[in-house]
Image (cartoon, rainbow over all chains, first blue to last red; front, side, top):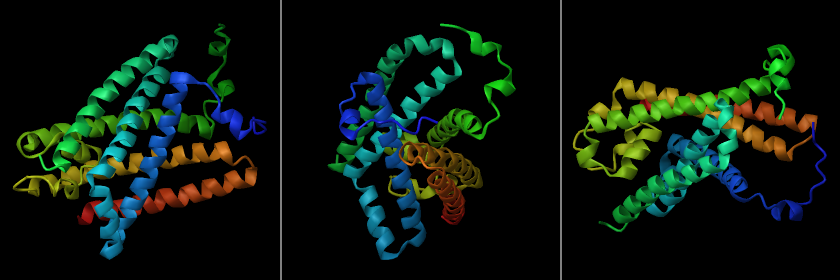
Length: 124
Length: 144
């Protein structure tokens, strides 16, 4: 089962996985961020009242929107790359090129979303 | 590079194990969510998102087509946005996303919890979470 990994935390942090590792760890951060956000958001909307409205007010703030849009859009675009490569394994030799395409698509969509959020947030 | 694994029968490859089924489910549910999100995006454009909403508002609607997500926009009439069609779309998206997301949490937890007992507890907890999140989410969608 590979349960005994014998890798210390420091070794793990120094792991130089480069581009593919960066997408892997950002996929996890984005997924975890969304899971926590959506769980708390659902509970806050369900309980409503003063506490619920307070939590949802934080979520509606444009600064938080920038964070959650990163989680959602990166997870969605990286997830699409993973799905395409896994369903068409012949493309796996080109996974680094796929990651480059992924970053171009992500930066274009996320950049435009952040631009819109900031312009609206600053009252434009 | 050998292609030996391709000669194994499906049963020998273990395609029927629960974890493999969930591996396939994670990929297919991602495509399913993409279909529902694009559906929400097209619907928003048909219902007039072009004039009264910004890009971020449209994305927020597409990722969860619930009427509360468009109440802060400049839309004059949000009645078409709370039609049963969108409540059904939101329900489908919710159920798929909860399954996909909670299974993802189990995958992450398995990287840090290695004992059989610990993994059993994680699985019981994930079942409770899937059920409660779907019930609370459906309640919120159909009462908003």
